[in-house]
Image (cartoon, rainbow, N blue to C red; front, side, top):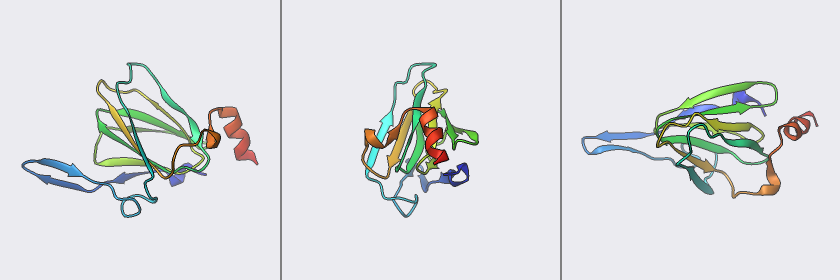
Length: 135
């Protein structure tokens, strides 16, 4: 998979004097059905998260509060994305190595996923990830 498939997606935003509302519908706003949602919060300063790739998962990563960086790697190229808006998300297809860092105080990272988690389909070793890409 190539980093060219990764992209920032602008999400619908409804604004009015009562506040803003953003919603996400699988297939309508993102290129997959949502089967799992998780969020990361209370990340200590200087802590990194992620450091793996998924063989078959599509993900949409959203900074619903605060900010953080997402480093994506396809085995040939690395790219850094700074997420800091709750109405945008970063789409990542399968076989993209991802790392999260530079969390602001109070940051909340919300992730929409195309399937349930499987340890067997998660690649935790960067060298193994690179080897798989050569096959």
